[in-house]
Image (tube, rainbow, N blue to C red):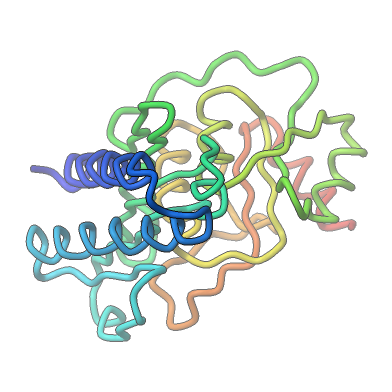
Length: 242
């Protein structure tokens, strides 16, 4: 099984487990998020360590083991990206299984369990036709100031959505043109989505245009830009002026 096949398989199975946990009906919204995180994390970490015992692992739900810094191959996972949305039984949450190769998000799968989809870095599809009026994805509760300013400057339509993975895959799927985030994230929030988005031909970078680097000692990765290539230069310039 290739790395990409493994990532997709794990994202699919973890998504199925999460749907089963939610369907059990025994948890409140808050407890559901915690139960889902624990269940998916246990499965993913155990499976990766069994299938790729020589690789490092970084998970949102595991205490960081800095032993990973000695590995060129590190799996970076978010068992439930958008725990609140999952707990609220919304569909805009995701499962992230990414692989960093020498600091680059190179392989990834993003599961969208409620949509029955797993988006993969090894199965890129042509980008759908862009909308005449660009659509920019923002947080449901705290849209970034820079995103609002850039949207106003280019006349973009704002689209509210939950998790980072759901937003990134919305650009891949042609539901939006731009995802600009400046509110603070960690490596597990973007590694798998960035690998998938890049494989599909999208622009991926920090908001200033610099490369995204993974498996760092400090896992905080505060900003992110995933967009159609034709918008990248203008969005980066406008964000710098904010």
